[in-house]
Length: 434
Image (cartoon, rainbow, N blue to C red; front, side):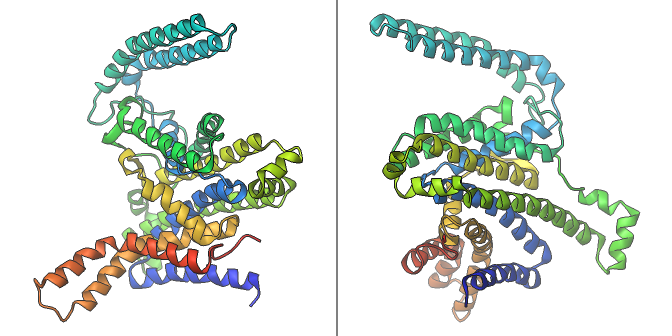
């Protein structure tokens, strides 16, 4: 069997598994897996750009996904006029003061001559600026968070269409990646991993605690959707008539229609991302990135600016992850900062890239679909397996209780087994880099 045929069969197999889920569980579950598989595939492509193209060990994917989710709120949610009147202008004025203080401190630090007077002046500017910033910022934040805290208590957004938030989420993540990359990309691979993981945790901590910006742990719900609401479809006589003509219940048909709409939008984005990433990978730029990945010293000796290229691909990959994060938040319809966990939004994406095939965009897509399918389906299948194995044991038996309770951990066990098997028998992934 030739390689293209094998790769096509792998995709057919994974899509067949998702299709089979629609028969033995429900079409609603299958479409849910498909939609999150599309989003996960985009995230995997973003990480593949960093690791597969350039060998950058980024363990902070979660932070860029979270920034994309925050951007969806800031762009698509309606503004809260009362909160803006209470302290919105003062809060942004305080942020501008903080940025100005940092800029002045950097300017003073770079001015000659070196010595203790320069250090003392820089420290004095930072300390004084910090207290002035807090004196302006804290009262503004308290005033904003007191505005109807049960439902708002934050500034809201710009009220733009939610689809606009997807590319803007990528831009915001790219800006954060530039700031992070300027300081962290000079570290070796293991230290880079520690730095990016720590920065991602800082981003999520900010989302959890800055209620004036993202409502913190109170969550933001009611985020606008790019597709109709089910209740609106059920109230439409035309839609009800078409659903009835097809022999479907209008409530079920509305849910399927909405999820198919999401799938169509996400598929368009995925195809565009794949096309652009393939064009880049097969261009002279892509060959240069792989040369830098394989031997930085040789590439530098040939006149390539390794640091600049690392920063460039780090920004591009983070932008793709940020856009995927914005898409996921619009799919969920809410922003839950506590839901951003490294296991789901960093290490699971890494498993997708490794299993699919590092350095191959189609491998990353395959890994995104396959691993997300297993992540969702392994637990109920594990419970079914345990029920079958323990069917002959009496109720209350310690072994039966233990095995049934262990089914909740089947996800973690399965992911570990998959990693071990892949690294042992196919370390380059299901669709290896050519």
